[in-house]
Length: 297
Image (cartoon, rainbow, N blue to C red; front, top):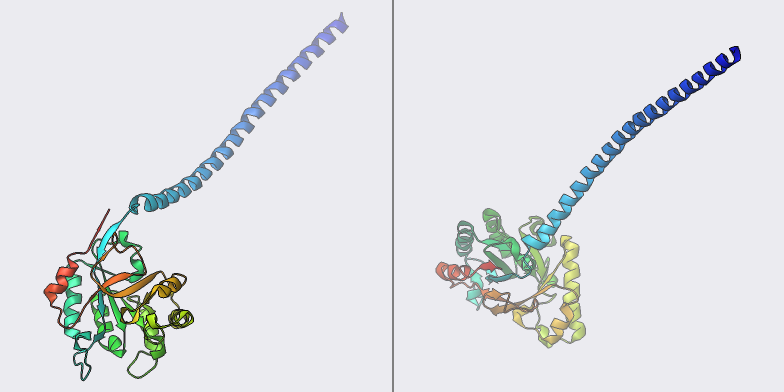
């Protein structure tokens, strides 16, 4: 009888121990699961924060590419061609190339007061950024540009593209390397190539044309530390050889004349037309060209 009682008690203890063990295991499971869940949740939340940030950036990029930049942009852009900004042309026979500084100032003031956007030539690929773009270009660019045009561009905070004859640099009445560097560093002027010697390209052979295009580009890039992307044909003269060569070194080529640039008509980037801004151009004529500026989708 006594043994039966002991066995019964032992069985009760065993059952009790088992129950306690089960309770401990179950409690431990829930406690551990709760801890792990918090860690995992925190980890997931952190990852979601990172993921959402990345997604937001990606969406912004997609928006910029897909929505802010239309698939097709049409634009008309007046591109003005200047030469010398100088009051007195002296004995120089082509007097129309000498624009008075006061005339340039009137034009810059008109641009500024009427909401036009001056752009560099290499921004013709980025016209979606602008509503009323206009480009100011200066050929040859003797020291008169530095003395008379550059201060006015700074005064009215307007951009321009200038075309340099590299064999003339540091020569008499021409721009020095130091002046070119100062101009380039201003952020208002892009310095581009007008060949080495300003001779007629259409009278040169292939190798001579390569030398004109490549060596002028390399020298200007060495002086300014900036990429040279645009080639301006001296006196507007070039041929098919010119076009075949420069497409490997430049993004744009500028003609001398041709009127207002129309992206739907002037589809060859190496035959960009310009307007001759001569000494006789009135402010009303200048304004009439500006009025044709527009970007539409």
